[in-house]
Image (cartoon, rainbow, N blue to C red; front, side, top):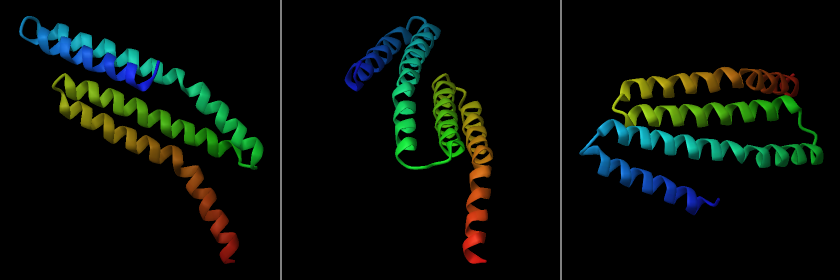
Length: 128
């Protein structure tokens, strides 16, 4: 599927959810949730292409695999946190969605700490 197809799935599900809102509001929420999961898992399927490309880049230039693994973790944390936060906010639970966003940001910061330490060590070598 292309981006256009995914956009159509999203728009159609939202339009159906809006039309269901008058009759049964929870059905609209479930429909949007199902569409969100469909799009999410389709996006996760694209990760194989991204990982293969990152491995190819790593073969061309010598990059420590820890850095690429950390980058993938950071992207994954961001994607999942945004997805979960959006669902919570759409369901009317904005406070929970905001807390998920904060936790996601803190998780990215925690995962990136080894890279920050390696950068500081590298700078220390150059400054010494």
